[in-house]
Image (tube, rainbow, N blue to C red):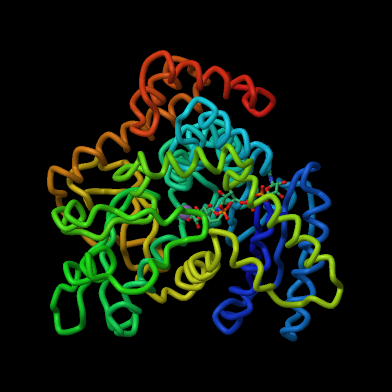
Length: 436
Ligand code: NAD
Ligand code: G6P
Ligand code: MN
Protein backbone atom coordinates (compact mmCIF):
# COMPACT_ATOMS: atom_id res chain seq x y z
CA UNK A 1 0.00 0.00 0.00
CA UNK A 2 1.24 3.44 -0.90
CA UNK A 3 1.96 6.43 1.26
CA UNK A 4 2.13 9.67 -0.72
CA UNK A 5 3.29 12.86 0.95
CA UNK A 6 2.75 16.29 -0.59
CA UNK A 7 4.83 19.22 0.63
CA UNK A 8 2.91 22.46 0.16
CA UNK A 9 -0.35 20.57 0.56
CA UNK A 10 -2.28 23.81 1.18
CA UNK A 11 -1.89 24.82 -2.47
CA UNK A 12 -5.11 25.51 -4.33
CA UNK A 13 -3.86 22.94 -6.86
CA UNK A 14 -4.32 20.04 -4.41
CA UNK A 15 -7.85 19.09 -5.61
CA UNK A 16 -6.29 18.64 -9.08
CA UNK A 17 -3.84 16.16 -7.60
CA UNK A 18 -6.51 14.26 -5.70
CA UNK A 19 -8.63 14.06 -8.85
CA UNK A 20 -5.65 12.57 -10.69
CA UNK A 21 -5.14 9.89 -8.03
CA UNK A 22 -8.83 9.04 -8.08
CA UNK A 23 -8.75 8.66 -11.88
CA UNK A 24 -5.92 6.17 -11.45
CA UNK A 25 -7.30 4.36 -8.43
CA UNK A 26 -6.92 0.99 -10.12
CA UNK A 27 -3.22 1.60 -10.69
CA UNK A 28 -2.43 3.21 -7.35
CA UNK A 29 -2.87 1.13 -4.19
CA UNK A 30 -3.01 4.23 -2.01
CA UNK A 31 -3.49 3.89 1.70
CA UNK A 32 -2.41 7.23 3.03
CA UNK A 33 -2.07 10.74 1.66
CA UNK A 34 -0.30 13.25 3.86
CA UNK A 35 -0.51 16.97 3.12
CA UNK A 36 2.28 18.98 4.74
CA UNK A 37 2.33 22.73 5.09
CA UNK A 38 3.69 25.42 7.41
CA UNK A 39 2.11 27.73 9.98
CA UNK A 40 1.50 30.44 7.36
CA UNK A 41 -0.45 28.00 5.22
CA UNK A 42 -2.34 26.29 8.02
CA UNK A 43 -5.74 27.70 7.20
CA UNK A 44 -5.39 26.86 3.51
CA UNK A 45 -4.23 23.37 4.45
CA UNK A 46 -7.29 22.75 6.56
CA UNK A 47 -9.72 23.96 3.91
CA UNK A 48 -8.11 22.09 1.06
CA UNK A 49 -7.58 19.00 3.22
CA UNK A 50 -11.28 18.80 4.04
CA UNK A 51 -12.00 19.24 0.34
CA UNK A 52 -9.63 16.37 -0.51
CA UNK A 53 -11.37 14.12 1.99
CA UNK A 54 -14.75 14.88 0.41
CA UNK A 55 -13.40 14.11 -3.07
CA UNK A 56 -12.10 10.76 -1.86
CA UNK A 57 -15.26 9.91 -0.02
CA UNK A 58 -17.40 10.80 -3.05
CA UNK A 59 -15.27 8.39 -5.07
CA UNK A 60 -16.07 5.65 -2.57
CA UNK A 61 -12.43 5.22 -1.54
CA UNK A 62 -11.05 4.56 1.92
CA UNK A 63 -7.77 6.48 1.57
CA UNK A 64 -6.86 8.53 4.61
CA UNK A 65 -5.83 12.17 4.30
CA UNK A 66 -3.65 13.50 7.08
CA UNK A 67 -2.87 17.18 7.52
CA UNK A 68 0.25 18.24 9.35
CA UNK A 69 2.86 20.93 9.88
CA UNK A 70 5.41 18.34 11.03
CA UNK A 71 7.30 17.52 7.86
CA UNK A 72 9.77 14.98 9.13
CA UNK A 73 7.18 12.83 10.86
CA UNK A 74 5.00 13.09 7.76
CA UNK A 75 7.79 11.82 5.52
CA UNK A 76 8.37 8.64 7.49
CA UNK A 77 8.15 5.58 5.20
CA UNK A 78 6.77 7.60 2.29
CA UNK A 79 6.80 5.91 -1.12
CA UNK A 80 6.33 9.09 -3.12
CA UNK A 81 6.95 12.66 -2.07
CA UNK A 82 5.53 15.41 -4.25
CA UNK A 83 6.47 19.05 -3.78
CA UNK A 84 4.34 22.05 -4.66
CA UNK A 85 5.35 24.66 -2.13
CA UNK A 86 5.95 28.37 -2.57
CA UNK A 87 8.27 29.96 -0.03
CA UNK A 88 6.64 33.24 0.98
CA UNK A 89 3.36 32.30 -0.74
CA UNK A 90 1.78 34.48 -3.40
CA UNK A 91 2.80 37.71 -1.66
CA UNK A 92 6.41 36.80 -2.42
CA UNK A 93 5.48 36.19 -6.05
CA UNK A 94 3.93 39.65 -6.23
CA UNK A 95 7.33 41.06 -5.25
CA UNK A 96 9.11 38.73 -7.68
CA UNK A 97 7.07 40.16 -10.52
CA UNK A 98 6.59 43.77 -9.47
CA UNK A 99 10.06 44.80 -8.34
CA UNK A 100 11.73 44.11 -11.72
CA UNK A 101 8.78 45.64 -13.57
CA UNK A 102 9.09 48.81 -11.48
CA UNK A 103 12.50 49.12 -13.21
CA UNK A 104 11.07 48.31 -16.63
CA UNK A 105 12.37 44.73 -16.56
CA UNK A 106 10.42 41.45 -16.87
CA UNK A 107 9.82 39.78 -13.52
CA UNK A 108 8.50 36.40 -14.68
CA UNK A 109 8.20 34.02 -11.76
CA UNK A 110 10.12 31.15 -13.33
CA UNK A 111 12.59 32.34 -15.97
CA UNK A 112 13.28 35.98 -15.23
CA UNK A 113 14.47 37.92 -12.21
CA UNK A 114 11.45 36.60 -10.29
CA UNK A 115 12.38 33.01 -11.07
CA UNK A 116 15.93 33.53 -9.85
CA UNK A 117 14.71 34.97 -6.56
CA UNK A 118 12.21 32.14 -6.22
CA UNK A 119 15.11 29.72 -6.69
CA UNK A 120 17.16 31.48 -3.99
CA UNK A 121 14.28 31.02 -1.54
CA UNK A 122 13.39 27.49 -2.58
CA UNK A 123 16.65 25.60 -3.09
CA UNK A 124 17.70 25.60 0.58
CA UNK A 125 14.28 24.18 1.48
CA UNK A 126 14.38 21.38 -1.07
CA UNK A 127 17.83 20.42 0.25
CA UNK A 128 16.40 20.38 3.80
CA UNK A 129 13.54 18.15 2.66
CA UNK A 130 16.09 15.76 1.16
CA UNK A 131 18.01 15.71 4.45
CA UNK A 132 14.82 14.57 6.17
CA UNK A 133 14.11 12.03 3.45
CA UNK A 134 17.58 10.49 3.81
CA UNK A 135 16.71 9.71 7.40
CA UNK A 136 13.10 8.63 7.24
CA UNK A 137 12.23 7.47 3.71
CA UNK A 138 15.47 6.60 1.92
CA UNK A 139 13.71 4.72 -0.89
CA UNK A 140 11.08 7.29 -1.80
CA UNK A 141 10.71 8.97 -5.18
CA UNK A 142 10.70 12.75 -5.17
CA UNK A 143 8.34 14.26 -7.72
CA UNK A 144 9.09 17.96 -7.91
CA UNK A 145 6.62 20.51 -9.18
CA UNK A 146 7.98 23.44 -7.26
CA UNK A 147 9.18 26.17 -9.55
CA UNK A 148 11.57 27.02 -10.98
CA UNK A 149 11.14 23.28 -11.51
CA UNK A 150 14.28 22.75 -13.61
CA UNK A 151 16.60 24.48 -11.16
CA UNK A 152 14.96 22.96 -8.10
CA UNK A 153 15.25 19.50 -9.64
CA UNK A 154 18.90 20.10 -10.57
CA UNK A 155 19.63 21.16 -6.99
CA UNK A 156 17.88 18.02 -5.65
CA UNK A 157 19.77 15.60 -7.90
CA UNK A 158 23.19 17.21 -8.28
CA UNK A 159 23.57 18.84 -4.89
CA UNK A 160 21.14 16.91 -2.67
CA UNK A 161 22.29 13.66 -4.27
CA UNK A 162 18.69 12.42 -4.47
CA UNK A 163 18.88 10.49 -7.74
CA UNK A 164 15.29 9.33 -7.49
CA UNK A 165 13.97 12.78 -8.37
CA UNK A 166 11.83 13.71 -11.35
CA UNK A 167 10.83 17.27 -12.21
CA UNK A 168 7.51 17.95 -13.87
CA UNK A 169 5.65 20.64 -15.72
CA UNK A 170 2.27 20.82 -17.41
CA UNK A 171 3.44 22.89 -20.40
CA UNK A 172 4.42 19.91 -22.60
CA UNK A 173 1.00 18.35 -22.00
CA UNK A 174 -0.63 21.48 -23.40
CA UNK A 175 1.61 21.44 -26.47
CA UNK A 176 0.81 17.77 -27.16
CA UNK A 177 -2.90 18.41 -27.04
CA UNK A 178 -2.54 21.48 -29.29
CA UNK A 179 -0.67 19.41 -31.89
CA UNK A 180 -3.27 16.67 -31.73
CA UNK A 181 -6.13 19.14 -32.19
CA UNK A 182 -4.46 20.98 -35.04
CA UNK A 183 -3.63 17.81 -36.93
CA UNK A 184 -6.88 16.10 -36.06
CA UNK A 185 -4.95 13.03 -34.98
CA UNK A 186 -5.34 11.42 -31.54
CA UNK A 187 -2.41 12.09 -29.27
CA UNK A 188 -1.49 8.45 -28.87
CA UNK A 189 -1.03 8.18 -32.63
CA UNK A 190 1.58 10.92 -32.60
CA UNK A 191 5.18 10.73 -31.41
CA UNK A 192 6.52 13.77 -29.62
CA UNK A 193 10.11 14.53 -28.90
CA UNK A 194 10.83 17.41 -26.56
CA UNK A 195 14.25 18.73 -25.57
CA UNK A 196 15.58 21.68 -23.64
CA UNK A 197 15.18 22.79 -20.07
CA UNK A 198 12.12 23.65 -18.01
CA UNK A 199 10.04 26.43 -19.56
CA UNK A 200 12.64 26.55 -22.32
CA UNK A 201 12.21 23.50 -24.52
CA UNK A 202 11.36 22.84 -28.13
CA UNK A 203 9.65 19.86 -29.71
CA UNK A 204 9.22 17.88 -32.91
CA UNK A 205 6.25 15.73 -33.88
CA UNK A 206 5.84 12.62 -36.07
CA UNK A 207 2.76 10.64 -37.08
CA UNK A 208 2.45 6.87 -37.05
CA UNK A 209 3.40 6.53 -40.72
CA UNK A 210 6.77 7.94 -39.70
CA UNK A 211 6.24 11.29 -41.34
CA UNK A 212 7.47 14.34 -39.49
CA UNK A 213 4.68 16.89 -39.02
CA UNK A 214 6.66 19.66 -37.28
CA UNK A 215 6.85 22.09 -40.22
CA UNK A 216 3.16 21.70 -40.92
CA UNK A 217 2.35 22.42 -37.28
CA UNK A 218 4.54 25.52 -37.34
CA UNK A 219 2.48 26.75 -40.29
CA UNK A 220 -0.81 25.85 -38.68
CA UNK A 221 -0.02 27.41 -35.31
CA UNK A 222 2.19 30.36 -36.20
CA UNK A 223 1.86 30.83 -39.98
CA UNK A 224 0.13 33.64 -41.86
CA UNK A 225 -2.88 31.39 -42.51
CA UNK A 226 -3.17 30.02 -39.01
CA UNK A 227 -6.65 29.25 -37.81
CA UNK A 228 -8.27 29.50 -34.43
CA UNK A 229 -6.81 30.45 -31.13
CA UNK A 230 -3.46 29.51 -29.83
CA UNK A 231 -4.33 27.30 -26.89
CA UNK A 232 -1.42 28.20 -24.65
CA UNK A 233 -1.80 28.71 -20.92
CA UNK A 234 -3.79 31.30 -19.05
CA UNK A 235 -0.68 32.66 -17.41
CA UNK A 236 1.19 33.56 -20.60
CA UNK A 237 0.07 36.52 -22.69
CA UNK A 238 -0.52 35.18 -26.18
CA UNK A 239 1.56 37.66 -28.18
CA UNK A 240 2.45 36.28 -31.59
CA UNK A 241 5.81 34.82 -32.42
CA UNK A 242 7.41 35.94 -35.65
CA UNK A 243 6.55 33.19 -38.08
CA UNK A 244 9.68 33.51 -40.23
CA UNK A 245 11.92 33.04 -37.23
CA UNK A 246 10.05 30.00 -35.92
CA UNK A 247 10.00 28.54 -39.43
CA UNK A 248 13.77 28.95 -39.58
CA UNK A 249 14.14 27.33 -36.17
CA UNK A 250 12.45 24.20 -37.51
CA UNK A 251 11.15 23.17 -34.08
CA UNK A 252 8.04 24.12 -32.18
CA UNK A 253 8.80 26.55 -29.35
CA UNK A 254 7.19 26.39 -25.91
CA UNK A 255 4.88 29.13 -24.68
CA UNK A 256 7.59 30.58 -22.45
CA UNK A 257 9.88 31.21 -25.44
CA UNK A 258 7.80 34.33 -26.02
CA UNK A 259 9.70 35.97 -23.18
CA UNK A 260 12.90 35.57 -25.22
CA UNK A 261 11.89 35.65 -28.87
CA UNK A 262 9.46 38.54 -28.50
CA UNK A 263 10.72 39.96 -25.24
CA UNK A 264 9.74 43.52 -26.14
CA UNK A 265 6.09 42.57 -26.75
CA UNK A 266 5.92 40.61 -23.53
CA UNK A 267 7.55 43.41 -21.59
CA UNK A 268 5.14 45.97 -23.01
CA UNK A 269 2.19 43.83 -21.95
CA UNK A 270 3.67 43.14 -18.50
CA UNK A 271 4.25 46.84 -17.92
CA UNK A 272 0.59 47.48 -18.68
CA UNK A 273 -0.39 44.80 -16.17
CA UNK A 274 1.99 46.34 -13.67
CA UNK A 275 0.50 49.79 -14.10
CA UNK A 276 -3.03 48.43 -13.68
CA UNK A 277 -2.07 46.50 -10.55
CA UNK A 278 -2.76 43.31 -12.47
CA UNK A 279 0.45 41.38 -12.71
CA UNK A 280 -0.15 37.65 -12.98
CA UNK A 281 0.56 37.12 -9.27
CA UNK A 282 -2.05 39.71 -8.35
CA UNK A 283 -4.64 38.15 -10.66
CA UNK A 284 -3.83 34.70 -9.29
CA UNK A 285 -4.20 35.91 -5.73
CA UNK A 286 -7.79 36.94 -6.47
CA UNK A 287 -8.43 33.60 -8.18
CA UNK A 288 -6.99 31.82 -5.17
CA UNK A 289 -9.32 33.70 -2.82
CA UNK A 290 -12.32 32.69 -4.95
CA UNK A 291 -11.13 29.09 -5.08
CA UNK A 292 -10.82 28.85 -1.31
CA UNK A 293 -14.33 30.29 -0.93
CA UNK A 294 -15.54 27.43 -3.15
CA UNK A 295 -13.46 24.82 -1.30
CA UNK A 296 -15.06 25.90 1.99
CA UNK A 297 -18.43 24.69 0.75
CA UNK A 298 -19.06 21.38 2.56
CA UNK A 299 -21.14 20.25 -0.42
CA UNK A 300 -18.32 20.63 -2.96
CA UNK A 301 -16.67 17.27 -3.56
CA UNK A 302 -15.11 17.66 -7.01
CA UNK A 303 -12.54 19.96 -8.59
CA UNK A 304 -14.33 23.20 -9.54
CA UNK A 305 -14.13 24.60 -13.08
CA UNK A 306 -12.59 27.80 -11.67
CA UNK A 307 -9.30 25.98 -11.10
CA UNK A 308 -8.77 25.97 -14.86
CA UNK A 309 -8.09 29.71 -14.50
CA UNK A 310 -4.73 28.76 -13.01
CA UNK A 311 -1.86 28.19 -15.41
CA UNK A 312 -1.12 24.83 -13.83
CA UNK A 313 -4.42 23.28 -14.81
CA UNK A 314 -4.09 19.59 -15.72
CA UNK A 315 -0.84 19.32 -13.87
CA UNK A 316 -2.17 16.20 -12.16
CA UNK A 317 -2.03 14.50 -15.54
CA UNK A 318 1.71 14.74 -15.18
CA UNK A 319 2.08 14.20 -11.44
CA UNK A 320 -0.24 11.25 -11.06
CA UNK A 321 0.77 9.58 -14.29
CA UNK A 322 4.44 9.64 -13.34
CA UNK A 323 3.65 7.98 -10.03
CA UNK A 324 1.47 5.36 -11.72
CA UNK A 325 4.11 4.73 -14.36
CA UNK A 326 6.93 4.26 -11.82
CA UNK A 327 4.74 2.16 -9.58
CA UNK A 328 3.59 -0.17 -12.38
CA UNK A 329 6.56 0.07 -14.73
CA UNK A 330 4.10 1.36 -17.33
CA UNK A 331 6.79 2.96 -19.48
CA UNK A 332 4.53 5.88 -20.30
CA UNK A 333 6.02 8.40 -22.71
CA UNK A 334 6.37 11.61 -20.73
CA UNK A 335 8.30 14.85 -20.69
CA UNK A 336 10.29 15.22 -17.50
CA UNK A 337 13.20 17.05 -15.96
CA UNK A 338 15.90 14.44 -15.50
CA UNK A 339 19.66 13.95 -15.76
CA UNK A 340 20.99 14.69 -19.22
CA UNK A 341 23.56 11.88 -19.42
CA UNK A 342 24.25 12.69 -23.06
CA UNK A 343 20.64 13.00 -24.22
CA UNK A 344 21.39 16.53 -25.41
CA UNK A 345 24.90 16.73 -26.74
CA UNK A 346 25.23 20.44 -26.17
CA UNK A 347 24.76 20.39 -22.39
CA UNK A 348 26.85 18.90 -19.58
CA UNK A 349 26.20 15.26 -18.64
CA UNK A 350 25.13 16.11 -15.11
CA UNK A 351 22.75 18.91 -16.13
CA UNK A 352 19.06 18.49 -15.59
CA UNK A 353 17.22 18.74 -18.88
CA UNK A 354 13.54 18.58 -19.79
CA UNK A 355 13.15 15.82 -22.35
CA UNK A 356 10.86 13.06 -23.57
CA UNK A 357 11.42 9.63 -22.21
CA UNK A 358 9.93 6.39 -21.04
CA UNK A 359 9.00 6.28 -17.36
CA UNK A 360 9.93 2.90 -15.91
CA UNK A 361 10.02 1.41 -12.42
CA UNK A 362 13.67 2.46 -12.19
CA UNK A 363 13.05 5.99 -13.40
CA UNK A 364 13.21 7.84 -16.68
CA UNK A 365 14.96 6.49 -19.77
CA UNK A 366 15.21 9.60 -21.96
CA UNK A 367 15.04 9.49 -25.75
CA UNK A 368 18.21 10.69 -27.34
CA UNK A 369 17.99 14.13 -28.93
CA UNK A 370 21.50 14.83 -30.21
CA UNK A 371 22.59 18.36 -31.01
CA UNK A 372 20.74 21.60 -31.53
CA UNK A 373 21.25 23.95 -34.45
CA UNK A 374 23.39 26.96 -33.48
CA UNK A 375 20.34 29.21 -33.03
CA UNK A 376 19.02 27.01 -30.24
CA UNK A 377 22.40 25.82 -28.94
CA UNK A 378 23.68 29.29 -28.11
CA UNK A 379 20.75 30.39 -26.04
CA UNK A 380 20.22 27.10 -24.25
CA UNK A 381 23.85 26.95 -23.17
CA UNK A 382 23.47 30.49 -21.86
CA UNK A 383 20.29 29.52 -20.00
CA UNK A 384 21.81 26.42 -18.46
CA UNK A 385 24.88 28.37 -17.33
CA UNK A 386 22.55 30.93 -15.79
CA UNK A 387 20.67 28.16 -13.96
CA UNK A 388 23.88 26.62 -12.63
CA UNK A 389 24.97 30.03 -11.39
CA UNK A 390 21.61 30.63 -9.68
CA UNK A 391 21.87 27.27 -7.91
CA UNK A 392 25.41 28.01 -6.74
CA UNK A 393 24.33 31.41 -5.45
CA UNK A 394 21.34 29.87 -3.65
CA UNK A 395 23.39 27.19 -1.94
CA UNK A 396 26.37 29.31 -0.99
CA UNK A 397 24.44 32.49 -0.25
CA UNK A 398 26.96 33.97 -2.62
CA UNK A 399 26.17 37.56 -3.60
CA UNK A 400 28.76 37.66 -6.39
CA UNK A 401 27.23 34.55 -7.96
CA UNK A 402 23.75 36.05 -7.60
CA UNK A 403 24.86 39.17 -9.41
CA UNK A 404 26.57 37.00 -12.01
CA UNK A 405 23.32 35.12 -12.61
CA UNK A 406 21.36 38.36 -12.95
CA UNK A 407 23.98 39.68 -15.34
CA UNK A 408 23.89 36.67 -17.66
CA UNK A 409 20.12 36.05 -17.57
CA UNK A 410 18.88 37.17 -21.01
CA UNK A 411 15.76 38.70 -19.45
CA UNK A 412 17.71 41.05 -17.20
CA UNK A 413 19.80 43.86 -18.69
CA UNK A 414 23.30 43.65 -17.25
CA UNK A 415 25.22 46.27 -15.36
CA UNK A 416 24.11 48.64 -12.67
CA UNK A 417 20.42 48.02 -13.33
CA UNK A 418 20.87 44.30 -12.69
CA UNK A 419 22.54 45.12 -9.40
CA UNK A 420 19.87 47.62 -8.38
CA UNK A 421 17.11 45.09 -9.02
CA UNK A 422 18.97 42.29 -7.27
CA UNK A 423 19.66 44.41 -4.20
CA UNK A 424 16.08 45.56 -3.95
CA UNK A 425 14.80 42.00 -4.29
CA UNK A 426 17.25 40.53 -1.77
CA UNK A 427 16.12 43.14 0.70
CA UNK A 428 12.40 42.65 0.03
CA UNK A 429 12.74 38.88 0.50
CA UNK A 430 15.29 38.95 3.31
CA UNK A 431 13.09 37.00 5.75
CA UNK A 432 13.17 34.04 3.39
CA UNK A 433 16.86 34.32 2.47
CA UNK A 434 18.84 33.50 5.60
CA UNK A 435 21.80 32.36 3.48
CA UNK A 436 22.47 35.82 2.03
P1 NAD B 1 1.02 28.67 -2.93
O1 NAD B 1 1.46 30.05 -2.72
O2 NAD B 1 -0.39 28.33 -2.70
O3 NAD B 1 1.92 27.73 -2.03
C1 NAD B 1 1.59 26.39 -1.85
C2 NAD B 1 1.71 26.03 -0.39
O4 NAD B 1 3.09 25.91 -0.03
C3 NAD B 1 1.11 27.07 0.55
O5 NAD B 1 0.02 26.53 1.25
C4 NAD B 1 2.28 27.44 1.45
O6 NAD B 1 1.91 27.70 2.77
C5 NAD B 1 3.16 26.22 1.33
N1 NAD B 1 4.55 26.40 1.78
C6 NAD B 1 5.32 27.49 1.72
N2 NAD B 1 6.54 27.24 2.23
C7 NAD B 1 6.53 25.95 2.62
C8 NAD B 1 7.49 25.10 3.23
N3 NAD B 1 8.70 25.53 3.56
N4 NAD B 1 7.12 23.82 3.50
C9 NAD B 1 5.89 23.36 3.21
N5 NAD B 1 4.96 24.13 2.62
C10 NAD B 1 5.27 25.40 2.35
O7 NAD B 1 1.48 28.23 -4.38
P2 NAD B 1 0.74 27.75 -5.68
O8 NAD B 1 0.49 28.93 -6.53
O9 NAD B 1 -0.36 26.85 -5.36
O10 NAD B 1 1.89 26.95 -6.38
C11 NAD B 1 2.55 25.91 -5.71
C12 NAD B 1 3.89 25.60 -6.32
O11 NAD B 1 3.74 24.78 -7.45
C13 NAD B 1 4.69 26.81 -6.78
O12 NAD B 1 6.05 26.61 -6.53
C14 NAD B 1 4.40 26.84 -8.27
O13 NAD B 1 5.40 27.52 -8.97
C15 NAD B 1 4.37 25.38 -8.57
N6 NAD B 1 3.66 24.97 -9.79
C16 NAD B 1 4.39 24.33 -10.72
C17 NAD B 1 3.81 23.87 -11.88
C18 NAD B 1 4.69 23.21 -12.88
O14 NAD B 1 4.39 23.22 -14.06
N7 NAD B 1 5.82 22.63 -12.47
C19 NAD B 1 2.44 24.06 -12.10
C20 NAD B 1 1.71 24.72 -11.11
C21 NAD B 1 2.33 25.16 -9.95
C1 G6P C 1 2.18 26.96 -16.05
C2 G6P C 1 3.54 26.48 -15.70
C3 G6P C 1 3.74 26.39 -14.23
C4 G6P C 1 3.38 27.67 -13.56
C5 G6P C 1 1.95 28.02 -13.89
C6 G6P C 1 1.60 29.38 -13.36
O1 G6P C 1 1.30 25.95 -15.90
O2 G6P C 1 3.84 25.24 -16.24
O3 G6P C 1 5.07 26.05 -14.00
O4 G6P C 1 3.53 27.56 -12.18
O5 G6P C 1 1.74 28.04 -15.26
O6 G6P C 1 0.23 29.52 -13.32
P1 G6P C 1 -0.41 30.64 -12.43
O7 G6P C 1 -1.87 30.43 -12.55
O8 G6P C 1 0.13 30.43 -11.04
O9 G6P C 1 0.06 31.94 -13.00
MN1 MN D 1 5.76 24.60 -15.49
